[in-house]
Length: 286
Image 1 (cartoon, rainbow, N blue to C red):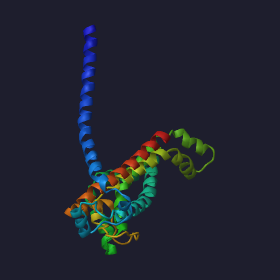
Image 2 (image 1 turned 90 degrees about the vertical axis):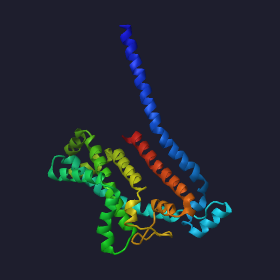
Image 3 (image 1 turned 60 degrees about the vertical axis):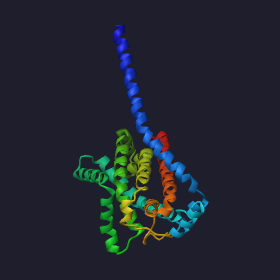
Image 4 (image 1 turned 45 degrees about the vertical axis):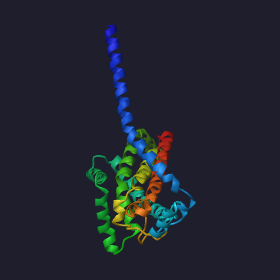
């Protein structure tokens, strides 16, 4: 009897140690990458980094030869990223929530099955393919690259996560909640808007934040739609820059290599903040 107890404890301990070992091995690359980005990117972080546009090759060459930090910053990329992500959210959030409501309320209808299939298909589609689609839909008819075309590509990428998070959030609500609202004489639309959506606010908003953080670092679709811009530009119907696009441009210029690390650090911190906010919302509302 005691041998059996000792054997189970030994097996439990070995399994625990194995899980810890593999967890450690999984965390090592992540810690190494983050440490490398922080150590190499922190030097370039200053006020000018957030307020000035990207430096030219000549300015960067002069700064590197003198041993000083590179001048300028990524303000044009920050402005473009904020503009395109905000426009994408304006397009994707209402459509995604409405589709999620339809999927939750009529889960077995032909429309719901079709939308669910398309959402899953888009979720697994490479971002470069979505960029090509946005190029054909927006850039070709408009005959110009633009931040609007980039926001359309990002909105397409955001939709699946918003749709499925809204559907799952509404499915988690007890059916008695809707029945009580209808029993009090409220219309179906009023119950959905004033009772069900506020009750599922935490999970829905978390899905929105996660979708935003997912598209914020995308480069491939923006290369085919927004193209890039060397100055700060708030006109969404003209070519626009973005932080991921600047990282790609810096990569192709040996004199601007230091800006790659600082831009990557900025993106990493921004995405971390969005994910942290989503975690806080989950703990508070879900």
